[in-house]
Length: 131
Image (cartoon, rainbow, N blue to C red; front, side):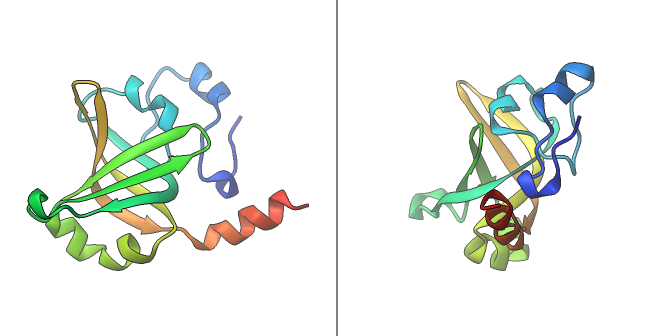
């Protein structure tokens, strides 16, 4: 059983139970499942942008927090990736991020390699929920 694209590219939990291998991009992993993935595994997440940070002490690193229906995903964006996907990072309300998963202590982050603005799907999601 798969969820459709309009529900933010989730793979339903039922699908996880049926498969023994971890989902690979472009399928998006729900935030609640990130801690179960292996360190440095290729991963894709999607969600609403709830926080953008560019601290002066971070040497050009951008931090994003995405929220989906299951929780939060912390994203780290290095300067070169930021320059390449600047428009999506600044203006996107709903993003899909592909990269590598990093576990460091109790923290889990996605190191971004590709960022896609999928904000146009928000209108479809809203109209579908109102029906």
